[in-house]
Length: 223
Image 1 (tube, rainbow, N blue to C red):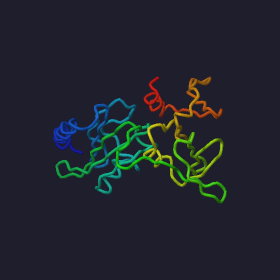
Image 2 (image 1 turned 45 degrees about the vertical axis):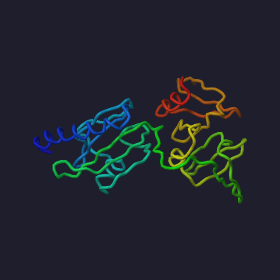
Image 3 (image 1 turned 180 degrees about the horizontal axis):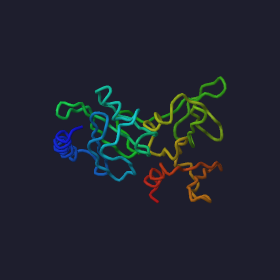
Image 4 (image 1 turned 90 degrees about the vertical axis):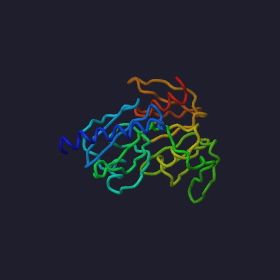
């Protein structure tokens, strides 16, 4: 991009940002991308590694918006931002150049489009079992399949953790790339020898908490 474009785009970006401040949470991050690189970035409280001039990563919300020219929203785990995030992307134009405006929210944020699940139907051998959501202790992604656990029994579902994260009640917290836990089944939280958090469930099962998701747990349980 030439210097004239960069100068004018900064002014236009500030106009977009001033409008966004009226409705986005104060801890949001905002990015604008044009011609496959970021031309503006304002960081909220999240640990986001992004700089102006950095290339748009394949698969990111910015890339999807620039490619499709459509509004896009998603929870993404593997991304430029190195931390799970909920993002909303909007197609815009800056000096007739197609661009993408991205609002990045904490990963615990979900857009209130649909009601939370009241039950999950799990498969066990050749049977399908509808299970009330509050009876589920935790949910696991293992070998590209999703499993949930009730009283020590394992059930398989076709719904991914990413999809479940958007539809589960607030008592379910994502603690790891592979785990979602029902806080009502947590017995205690401790640190292991490497100072990582481990959750012990009431049935004795232990689940790791990854650094990327520790803030989810701290926010939910206020510790």
